[in-house]
Image (tube, rainbow, N blue to C red; front, side, top):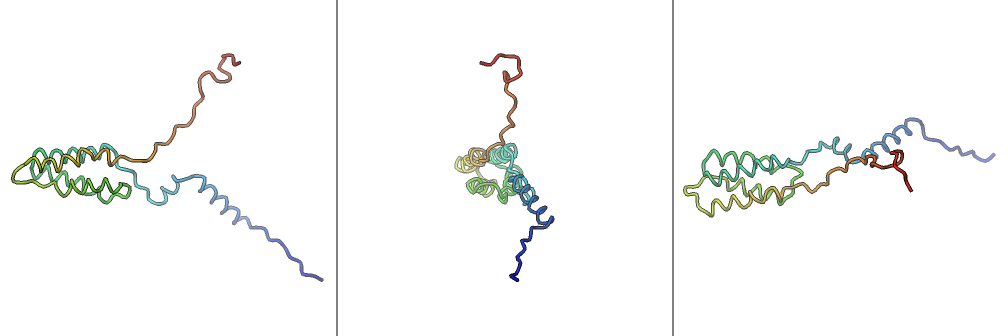
Length: 147
């Protein structure tokens, strides 16, 4: 008698695991971000605060104003989502935010130039999520005749 080959179907646990995997894949990047410890991009308001602190350091040339500028810029240097060009500006601001004996034009300009371009360079490149489509006025059932 020839050997009989039986086809083994996957068990219910395997089917459940497959279904959960498909659901996770369908959830998209949001689920992956939540699991990977996703860090939000710094807000424009927080970047503006860094910019204003650097401008105050350039204008006032005091230890307090420059220390505030450094204390706001330094933590952003380790931010995982900021581009390298943004971190270069933050590094310049942090390194040059020190009071000097004379507040020369070149000292002020070394702080003002990177501070002014900070918001443009550090802007997020991600697209905002599109809003859900809503029912357009004048559609079917609105009482208006369609031809």
